[in-house]
Image 1 (cartoon, rainbow, N blue to C red):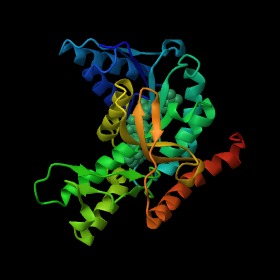
Image 2 (cartoon, helix red, strand yellow):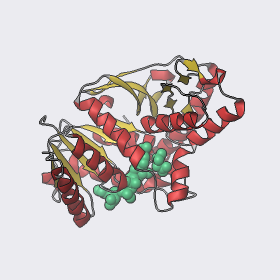
Image 3 (tube, rainbow, N blue to C red):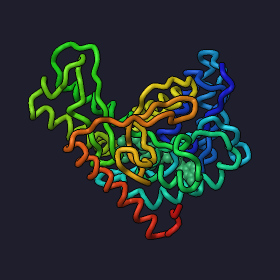
Amino acid sequence: MNNKTIGIVGVGNVGSSLAFSLALSSLCNKILLKDIREDYTKAMALDISQACKTTNNKTKIKACIENSEFKDCDIVVITAGVARKPNMSREELLYTNEKIINSIFDDILENNPKAIFLIVSNPLDAMVYVALKKTKLPRNRVFGMAGTLDSARFKYYIDEKIDFPYEKIEAMVIGAHSNTMLPLINHAKIDGKKIVDILKKDDLDYILDSTKNGGAKVVELLKTGSAYFAPSYSCFLLCKAIIEDSKNIFQVSTLLIKDYGYEDITLGVPAIIGKNGIEKIIELDLSSKEKEELEISAKTVENSINIFKIKKNNFKT
Ligand SMILES: NC(=O)C1=CN([C@@H]2O[C@H](COP(=O)(O)OP(=O)(O)OC[C@H]3O[C@@H](n4cnc5c(N)ncnc54)[C@H](O)[C@@H]3O)[C@@H](O)[C@H]2O)C=CC1
Ligand SMILES: O=C([O-])CC(=O)C(=O)O
C-alpha cells in the first residue's frame, strides 16, 4: 500500500460512502474524517475500519475531533454542507454552504499545505469559486466534482433508450452543475456511432431532459436528501486518477482563465487529471449552438458568484 492520506470533510451520505469505497480499495494508507457531528464521525470511522477487517485490509481510518489531527493530507474532499430537499434548486443552498466552506478552510488549510482540494458541496461551481478565492491556491489544486456524475447519468439515460447490444457509450456533460448543464448530445456515441444518427428525436429529448434533472429525480424519490452512491463513486474515481497519476480525462468544475473564452468563472469542462490535480484543460470544438447553451449555463454560475461579490465585496483579485 502507498503512503497516501485522503481527508474527507463532511461525513454524511456522500462523505461516508466515499470513505467506504476508498477504504476497501486500499487506494490510500490513511483516511481522515472530519465533521461537526463528532460521535457520528467516530461511529463511521469504527464501522468502516471494522469492514476493512473482513478482508484483512490495512487502511487506517481516523475520526479527527481536533483540527490539529486533520493534517498532511494528499487530497481533501469537501462534502460538508446542506443537501437539497424536494422542490429546491441547488442554488438555494448558496448562502448556507458558502459559510460552511469558508469556515472549513479556516480550520484545515494550514495543516494541509500540499493537499489537492476536491469540492463536492452544492451549488458546486459557486462553491469551487468560493474555495479558490478563500485558499488563493492555483486552479490545478482546487476543483469540483460533478461532470463525472452528470456524464454517468447521461450514459444511463442513453442506455435506457437502446434496445440492441453494444460495447461502449461515450457521453460527456459540460457546463454548470445545475439544470442548465450541457449534455453534449451531438458528441455522444455508441460503439463509435453518433447517437443523434441512431435514436429518434423524442428519445433524444427524453435523454437530455432526464440527464439535466438526474439529481432532482433522486431528491424527489429520497425526500430526505440527495444522491450519494453515484456522487461518491465519481469522487473515488477522481481520487484514484490523482493518486495513480492516470492522466485520464474527467469533466471537472474549474476556474476558466481565457479557456472557452471565459474569464474568472468556474464551470465544468473536460480536463486531464493526474498527480498535480488538473494537469491540462481540454478545449472542445463546440458548435455555435453549443456555445450559446454554454453561455446560458455560465450565466447560472455568474449569478451566484455576483451575489457573493455584491454581498461581501471580498473577491477582488
Ligand atoms: N457535486 C455533486 O455532484 C454533488 C454534490 N452534493 C452535495 O454534497 C453535499 C453533501 O451531501 P450529503 O452527503 O448527501 O449531505 P449530508 O447531509 O448527508 O452530509 C453533510 C455532512 O456535512 C456535515 N457538515 C455540515 N457542516 C459542517 C462543517 N462546518 N464542518 C464539517 N462538516 C459539516 C454534516 O454534519 C453532515 O454530516 C451537499 O451540499 C450536496 O448538495 C451531493 C451529491 C452530488
Ligand atoms: O441533486 C442534488 O442536489 C445533489 C447533486 O448535485 C446531484 O445528485 O447531482
